[in-house]
Image (cartoon, rainbow, N blue to C red; front, side):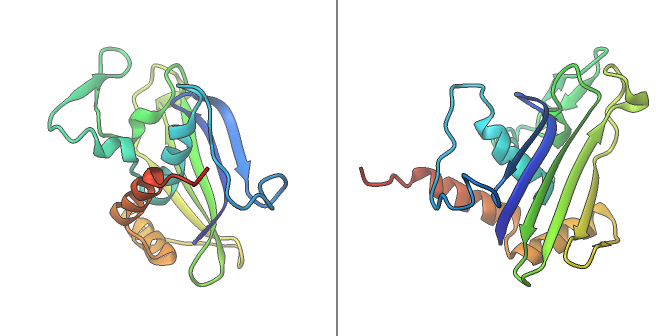
Length: 178
């Protein structure tokens, strides 16, 4: 799998829409690069956005596995701390994560994860996550339930969330020689 682009809107520390396109300069010819920034700048949120679009799960959710622990949402309603919708930025009514990737087949796909609040209001109840998967090479949107689409994505990239997360953790521990 090769990541082509990451896009999103209103996820954790990243307000509004954002995009990283690996097909244009300076990233296109950069080879190895690092994502750096101060605390709260959105570095981890970029990884979360990538994982949400591919797996409806985030690395930070793996660290929040306690059962029956909820955090306050809006209007004194709670949400499980390991619910993927908890990444929606406070004070916003909708958000998304979208990833374009080259699959093992060589085709280019777009996977999109979307969350919104009822009635488009910032105090509305969180709605179910919606997922779409589109083959950009053929222009055909893949059909199926969220579970079926997530399974298809894992087939296309050749990794489960657990394998992808383990690879990311391993890469974080590697230090480049100075």
